[in-house]
Length: 542
Ligand code: G
Ligand code: G
Ligand code: MN
Image (cartoon, rainbow, N blue to C red; front, side, top):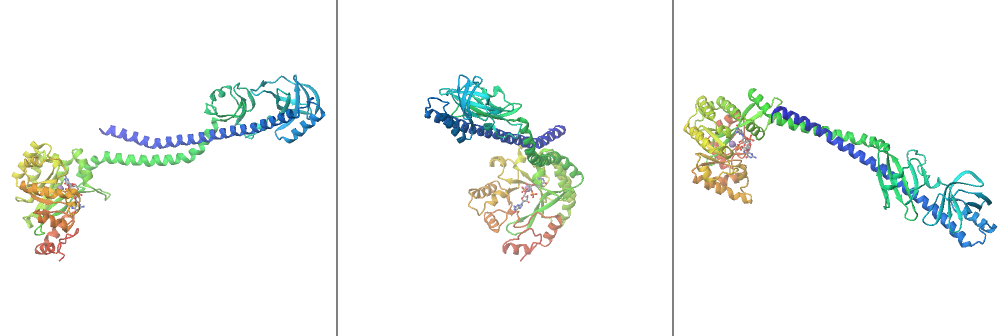
C-alpha cells in the first residue's frame, strides 16, 4: 500500500467512523418518533371505536325497549312518554322519534309531520343512517340519526360526541367509516378514500404515506371502522426532539471512534517513518541482560536488547517496532545501529573481562545479507573482540532461506563469532533441519521454562529439548528463569547457562559494568544462598 492510498483510506475510514454512529442515531430517533406518533394514532382510533360502541349500544337498547312496549300506535301519548324517559336515561342519545316513509311523525318533543331526507345508507344489521339531520325544536343542531328499519323507531346522536377526541389538535384527523362500503360516517379533518384499502379483512391497519400516518381499527360488533391520522410533519418534530438527545451522543461516539481510527492509522502509517527519523536521531540505546553460569553463578555474558526512547520520553517496546522494522525493510539499519552502539561500549568490557561475551539478535534479513558479515567484522575490529567475545542469536523464523543462511552463518563462525538458536521450540523446524545449521548454543524459550514446576503437560517438553541439544552437542542457555526451583531443575539436567529475572533484569551498560566489577568469588556464595535476585546489578547479597 503506498502512502497516498493509505492516507485516503484513513480519511475515508475516519469519515465513516464519524458518520455511521450519527446516521444510526438519526435513524433510531426517526424510528422512535414514528412509532410514538403511530401509537398515538392507534390509541385515538381505538378511543373513537369505544365511544361509538357506547353510542350504538345505547341506541340499540332504546330500540329494544320501544319494541318491547309493543305500542299499537308508535306516536301515542304513552309511547311518547316512554320515548322521553328513554331519552333522558341515555347519555349519548339526544332525541328519540318515529319515522315512516321519510316523515318524522313524532318524537320525545311532540307530534310532527316533518319530511326528512332519504337515508344516506342502510347498514347490514337493518338500520337506516341519515347524516346531519336537523330535529324539530332543536334548530341549528345537526344529528346523526339511526332508524330501526323494522319498527321505524329513530334515535339521534350528536355527531361530534363520538369523535370528540383530540379536538383541540387540528392536525389530527379522525373519523368513522362504514365497512365494507367505505362511506365516511363521521369525520373531522383530512380523510382519503384509498386509506380503507389498507384494512382489507384485517382487524386493524397501520400505514403511512408522504403526508400522514394512519391507524385504522375495525369494530368487532358493528359494520364500521374508526381511523385516526397524524401528519408526517409531526414525526419530524418528534425527530428533532429525539435528535437533540441522540445526535450529540452519536457525534461523541463518532468523534471518539474517529480519534481511535486516526490513532491506529497514524501508528500504522507513521511507525516506519518514525523509525527512520529515530535511526537518524539516535533515539535507540541498548540494555544488557546478563547470562549466568548455572554452576558458578558467574556472569559469563549478556544479551544486547535494543530500546527506543521517543523524544517525548515514551519507551516503545521492541516486540512492536522490531516487527515493523522487519516489514518496512529497516531491520538491517536497526541491527547496524545496535552494532554501532556496541562498538562504542563493548571494547572496554572485553578488555576488562576477556572471557565475557555479548549476544546480538539478528533477524531474517540480517542472516541473509553479506552486509551483516561486514558489520560484525567492523564491530570485532572496533572492540578488539577475540574468539568467543561476540555471539549472534538467530530465531527459527530467520532460517527460512536455509542455503543462504547456512553460508552466512558459516562465514560468521569462521570469524570467531559464536552462534545461538534463539526462542527454540517456538517455530516449526525439526531436529534434523536444525542439525544442518552449525550452532554453538541453543536458547530454551521462556515459554517452556515457565512450565517448570507446574503440572502443565508442556513441562515435559524441557527434558526433551535438553536431550535434543545434548545430541546436537549444543550448549544451552535457558531464558526467563524466575525461580530458584527452575534454576535447580535446569542445573541438575546439565543446562550450563541461564538468563532471567532470578539473576538479573536487562540493565544499562553502566549497571552491567558495576555488576561485573562487584562480582567474583562472592557470586558463588550468593548462588549457594539461593541465587541472586531481582534487577540488582549489585550482585552479592550474602
Ligand atoms: O527484552 P525485550 O522485551 O526488549 O525483548 C523483546 C524482543 O525483542 C525479544 O524477542 C528480543 O529478541 C527482540 N530484540 C531485542 N533487541 C533486538 C535487536 O537488536 N534486534 C532484533 N532483531 N530483535 C531484538
Ligand atoms: O530475545 P528474547 O526473545 O530472548 O527476549 C527476551 C525477552 O524476555 C526480553 O523481553 C526480556 O526483557 C524478557 N525477559 C528476560 N528474562 C525474563 C524473566 O525472567 N521473566 C520475564 N517475564 N521476562 C524476561
Ligand atoms: Mn534473543
